[in-house]
Length: 461
Image (tube, rainbow, N blue to C red; front, top):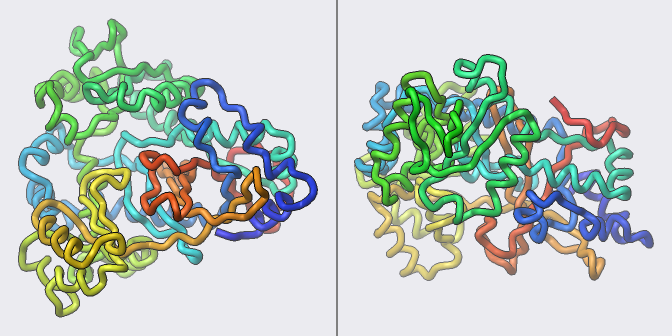
């Protein structure tokens, strides 16, 4: 999106001095991060006004509270009824509810587009398995380049280090076990999960170690128990940072029993599990449909409806039942066919655009067939949000090109916890995810109108 700082950055890029235009060529990331971001950097950082990004984070925090309250608000606290309403199958729901407490800590990352007027939520990743928490390494690397350092100084640019905020959360969560000593944290993936994304996890561990967290990497089948406490390769573990999902446990080779020692150690207060598997219910895109559906608006206050209207695009469940069959006086499937160009079909549980179908990329027959096949399988239809163009100067040609940006915005119980961007050119597809080879990552810097000078490394609280 165009704003004052973006405009001034681009003006310098197309001038006679090419040092800003080619800044990405001089960015040097530490080895732990280079495998993740080094060959997939956008040619420039992305800029946002500080009050806007923090205002969106405030809305997300309120939205988080609403989502977390849905089981009690709509289903009298019955989590199984809630799961069924979201289209989550019985087997998967059973795993999600193992160790459930009814409390989900405020810890999440929103994926959002800016439509030129405001941020709009695409999905809300709630829980502990959040990619991008190490993204501030990109901020640091850009600031090491003198040309950008000077630009950042002139414009008073700041950023929030997500790893620093997450480390605070983990230290506090582990405190009942550790007291004031440095916690030993095991990032646990599902069996085979570390190898599938081997370039990501060392960077996350490095970012945590830099903030007084002793992080180890492992998989669920590798943990053992000694005197009630989990160990990983012989090392006692104070806290498990869960990076495995219920779906991975359901389909994995170890069976649900692989969870037993982890849940037992958590229940006994020997090793903390952060976060429990029930968090995925609040993260389901089907849950957003329960907010968006105007037939349920009597369950929300006027202020809550204001937040929902600002942030959540039109979203509906494709669940077979009286509440879901009709919309706007028309059968839901007919409505979706009439508005095919404006809609996207998504699985309620999942990430990275896997399983999504964009209405405009299918024939009418393909679209109706996909909708019909998705009914009762936990899918949603959602209004497409069109991202405002993010203009970027090509370092080689000097030509300004439009990219679309998917913003990853983190929140914790302290509020805004940093952000980063994944961006894609239109010719490279419509789903902005690192699974698309055309996607590039960028750090986010914020500025304050009327403030012209600050230390560029200053991290805003």
